[in-house]
Length: 555
Ligand code: GLN
Image 1 (tube, helix red, strand yellow):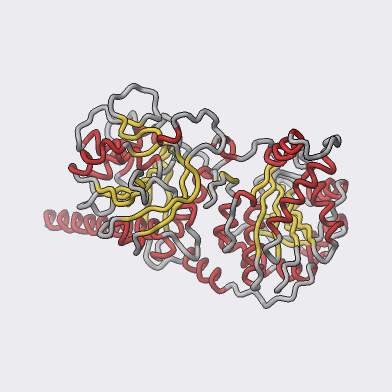
Image 2 (cartoon, rainbow, N blue to C red; image 1 turned 180 degrees about the vertical axis):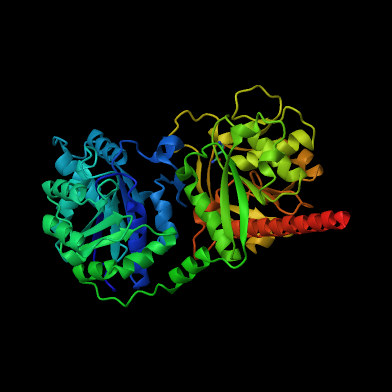
């Protein structure tokens, strides 16, 4: 398609939250791209926060950071991983951001004395922003957060209703993701919640054209007909989205169900048949890796909330894909490492240790203990952001013998803040969008492990932090063996460190996990998993040698 023609796919959710709208939206983007179309995804989040940056990870899960420094919903991570679309601030609208913009304009007198109302001012603001993002692509896939029926989502759904009528049936399609629960006592799948949820959507003036039914088993034809009957959706557009063994199987499953065909037919788009060969290859490798398995410990604070480490989890899986190994991820609560006699009992079963990003004081000493264990026992280690801070503190304390080395992020008094506030952070009081955010360039030392991994010395990675390595300790740590292999172009900020003469000890100030994709795994994760595999091989060799020695002594 030459002319960008503003075609829109609206995705709503019904019955329960966490139903997989984000992955559905990402998969639809992938399917349309596989047909040669240019797509983008937009997430409309009904909450009042301006962005999720200030929300607790316990409530919201990961904050995904884009190149332009936006703190966004974790679904944008799915969008970037599933498609080649580059997400930015404009791809994540929240009620807070919309109201903030409208109120600012009102204060500036831009509405010329009008009474400001949800319709038309809020809905117009939503539509204008969506149109701007959509103007550069063939199809924009819009996901409306929350569940139909929520009070907060009403303005977004009203904007959707208006856009459907303004752009017409050939340019808009509404897909409702819903749940068909299986009631064990009755041994039956139940369609009633879906009927009610579609009714709710109809009451808002939106008749869905396609239903994506989340269901944990086969959805019989008779039930599809029943759902079709109650919802005015043609039976062939009642699609079963059965559970998949890995998320990258979803585009394949939805294509088999004919979802992309339905979409392009409705939108009157002429496109080629989708080429899903790369997805098939990825899924095959993921499900049947030929090189065995590695076991990685992720030592963090939010271990009971896997969503908090969404991109990290995926990036590690991608690293496994490239090495053709399965990655078994073990979440280890860093606080639990603080009070035990020896951390070895908790960590010796793992092939590698990763300390991810995080905030606040809790669990920090446990992370430092885990890093000390990895460094001294030559276990592959990878630290990310806070993980780099902890690696620096560990080295300062135990190698440079600066006993009270610490980060200024904790309140306990210390003479030696080897990690300190960034200078530009010192006078900032506001919490929202005030960290060092987004993509920054970094220069790698030519002969470093970092440069060998990236196969270049000029990189750009995404950041989200307030604290950094304190330069007055650079010389001392360098003399003691730490290598500052990644530095900002102006040489002021330490972005990556490594320890030579160790199988793999590397930590970075940025978050490489945000840029890893299943079809383009990030090199830092590829090499970390490679090091874990080498460690796994060493461990099993040592076990074989041990067993042989025991056998010999028995003989
Ligand atoms: N809390 C640390 C800081 O603000 C690290 C942040 C992170 O890990 N993303 O600098």
